[in-house]
Image (cartoon, rainbow, N blue to C red; front, side, top):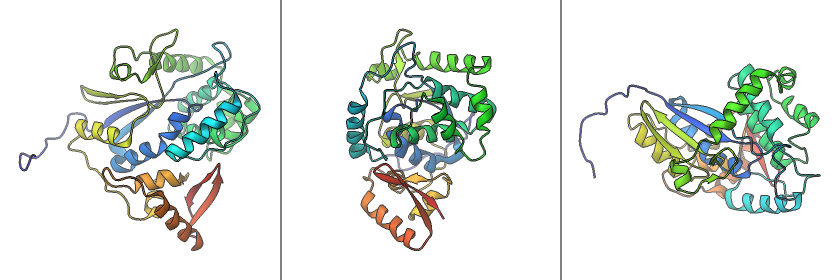
Length: 301
């Protein structure tokens, strides 16, 4: 064990770049939210997060292979295992994700930074409502709920050349996983265009160094990656109060996200205790609770 040594020298590139490959239709990408929130809490603006949409399905390549009933059953398994809110009832029909991915790309071009809010909104739509990702009326209704978003301009841009080009680039990058660590771990999927990253794969880079975290990973894998790329970074400790956890997230957090942020080291999240704290705060009108699937999204009052 290292007990002494020189102070770390500043890195040539102080921030880590994290490119997250995700898709609003993927329950794995959505279920990774608690781990991602914990890493965001610990390292704040020392990580430059960038979103790459995968484009898992479209009418040309085919609809998801699972029926709505099968997907609803799978959602029960996911919520029990990983803790994010899911509503377990079948949708009217299978839906593709390409239009929703285009909305994320259009948002990224028109209002950089808002693509994260749109991803979150579309994930909550997909996994907690009967609405369909590929129904443009449903999509517009969801986008209109994103505070500050010019949703009409986003909808108008869905099929314009700049969005077409950017969406093609995202899909090509998402299908460039051949020969990497993700493929070695069998965290990729086959596609006609090459090995595809599965959600929520992340490539972390700093200067000339890079580490690939393919597919679904525990929070410890992400933390280890960041620590090795940036041993000189500041790592914020876990908050002791749910209200503190909510300060970085005015859009709200699920119970599992808050519990994971409040977890130290390799401890397991203590969700029951955190939920009781949130209920006490609700009784004192310090937080708001918005019912979501089998759980809720909590917001500071």
